[in-house]
Image (tube, rainbow, N blue to C red):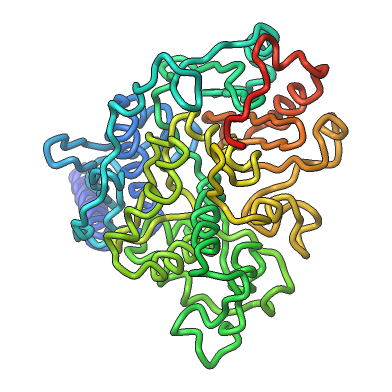
Length: 467
């Protein structure tokens, strides 16, 4: 009996020691996967609390944990509203990460615990979104909905599970919109990879000013003397750089390491080797888009001027007052993923593209630039374009419904802006639809595009808005 008791005590002691050792290991050297998970939790909660004004517990439960990742289900967060920081960790204490909010720049993950540089950036003015309440969108905020469109948007099979916002623009005016529970026309929502297209448009403004060219090469000093020196700006924009980059979000791959473990994301990407000759293979890469941010920011030179540039050159001219583009800890815009804006402001950007980059008679993007968003690159089988956009499927019910000039902005979890210039039609769909399941946002856009001529316009007259 004494032997059994002694053995039980030894076993209990061993278990305690094992738990203590595991806890010490997780505290001092947390596995990278835990840090990726906590970085994701901290970043999503921080942005949604301080940009979108949402409840942190709801964001953690719905946006972070509900999609079903077992690791994320055990993440816990704390919000320091005074310091404007969010701390996250596995069961609070293991593999912890922090995200910090700054006016005008949103939230930044701090992989090394250091605060990002304090740089003066024009903050988003909340009152601006309410301006012009008596004027029709896009000059103001007034919307006159079309009954036919409203009926379509009431069908959850078309708007999809987890829908948070849908906005339909015809002839330069919003003719219909709908919002999920807890969301409204004033809620900034993340575009995920739709940010890539906005980032490309920012480059377009610099091309228009003669400060960048698609033929530019020798882009990174560290590439000189190697084959990477031959990579052109056009190669990067068409995702045909040849650089190695693993876009697998299910593990600690290049993309998750970049977003949640690296302080200087662009430097991490620039250090990747070539796996194909530039211009010979398509490889979708969020790293490429973030590197593009560094390149255009370097063309501007002054860091403060560069951080204010998107607002000055693009957002303010077209009225995207809610737009917040976020940076990494080094101060480089994460041009692959992190732009928050209201659905109406995403629609403004879509309208700019549908009008060939012209807004109220002012050319924002150079002539011919938007057309590259409709031309497939050389090696994606007609899926991806030469300018950070996607082309619609040629199969299924969508085929034949949308005109040949249709192109998409597309982002993680069901973010879509469909642009159909020949129909003067833009369809924005935002939401939380993990994996998208059997839902294809193209069906909504295709349904609207297939409506009889004149139905969408309703009582609204054709307008010169945006032209």
